[in-house]
Image 1: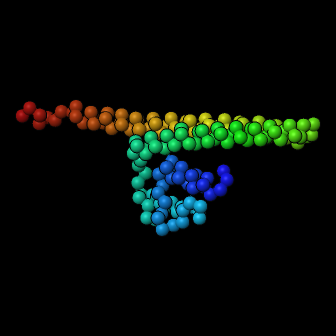
Image 2 (image 1 turned 45 degrees about the vertical axis):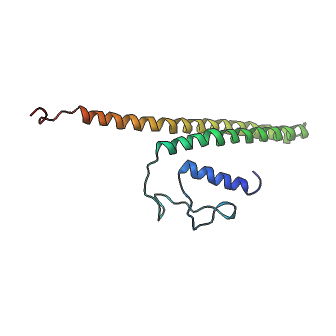
Length: 150
């Protein structure tokens, strides 16, 4: 990406995915990286938990921003590399560019698979936690005390 807008956008996506708020006293955005606050940083929350809504937000960020932007960047790189290959046709450079393009395409495929898996895991985690909580709650409710009926 060109300009500072891409850096700010990347920072915002990273913060939504990692649930790490920026330290308001530290530099953010185009002037420098945000200082993360989290469980391992002094002044952080010390909380590993994330709500189902936060998991949903992270999954939606993957689906609506990371996956389409990654695909768009890959297509742009393929187009430019293809143009360069044609320009160097008959030279060893064209063969080298083809090899680079093939490697790039495989890496993009792997990344897209990883993003999809992470999105699915985020969406599934909330359901698993809710099912576990409900199941444990039901076990407590179904347990009868010997004092019942006295």
